[in-house]
Image (cartoon, rainbow, N blue to C red):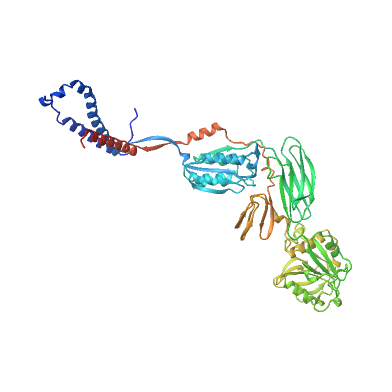
Length: 620
């Protein structure tokens, strides 16, 4: 027999009231039987009275019993009895980690892994609930709320198109629980592509008495998907992988403005990757695989290009041909007009042009006598208003009176060989990073930098040869390499240099800055942003959907492009059900259940019964 424990054992002295009650009950006077003649008629019904005597005694003893139990119960309450009960402490706090990565969109028989995970997660809510979305960067969707709120949040969550980071999600769940008992339930297909190893993290959490339960929702989906995209200004290369065990046939097409501009049928061997190259369309376009399969998020990829692809350049020169002209004509992203002073409004093709509507004006080997007065003043005004001017050194440059277009103060010409070496590494000079002294010159002009200018390259004596500066809203560059006295004009790096310089001055945007993988976080001034599925006002955006985003008056393409995330056929390596039961048993702990309230409730019932009995007997 197990003794009942008490929180206040000294309260057992109250049981003395039971003894007092019994003594008082025994000392009460007993009724005497007398024969009264006037009541003789009752004796005639003696047989009937004896039939009810048992019930009368029972009712009398019942009153005693009710009073005894009430006093006994009140006495026990004074001692505060309790019992130890086992319960699952993990039910007090529940952290649900929901995998919302791209692979969770995989469907089998019309049901996705994500749909299955949501259904199971709704059955797991209990106590105080927190919900973590396991994207490439874990997000807290809910923290320490009741079950009804948790169910509402779960019903509104949608799967995303990012990679998954279960390891960091587990660590975040640990922080949410803190020192509180609880359980962490992960609903996933367990294709972790980011973060720490989940088995290591789980072992750490288990050692801290946190129950981590893995629920596998994977299925037998099949997939052929776009896993890589190399977007360049003129052409794009797309990589398609077949994850299945059989050769797959797909129709690959390039779509722009809702119409297929090119398409081809492709055959991809089992577990292999094929690549295809096509011209990059301007604006927004998409690459689509047909027919769609069990994972549609990687059956399409989007491509975005900068709003302005080509830069207009005006070359002002007296020469019919030159290496510079050939280099500019060869550049695919430059629209070149060549003019010979004094007329700047008609190009060498006899076409009428507006010289100050160009993105860049290059002054290269001009004849002083051909320059109409006011020409350089107009160019300076053009630069002040936001235009870009490049002035190339020539023998009589000091006599040109360039009206503030130079970024240096020209000194005497130096007739001795020199190396030309990079002083500042940037977009223009990055091609010379491995070989900083990229050419040599037989002669050059000594010069000093004007205030606020930057030297990109210099001679051996540190005379600046390529110098960048700003003029109000515009930009000006001094190109001090005399092409006639240098071999630079014959090098393969020469046209690349000029193309890079023009792009730098115009501020041409790199096409790579318009094409991202999902999971990127973009920051900008607060504004209205359009995502593939909605619109919102924000200053910080997690790009976790495949499609086109619009902000800063530009359009950006975002794609999954992750070979491991698309590998939906991998088996999930998680614990077996038997191991889970052992963990649950370990988390069952004893709890002190106080019996004061239940005993008081029983005593109240006894007292009610006593009241109704006395009233029925007629004593009230």
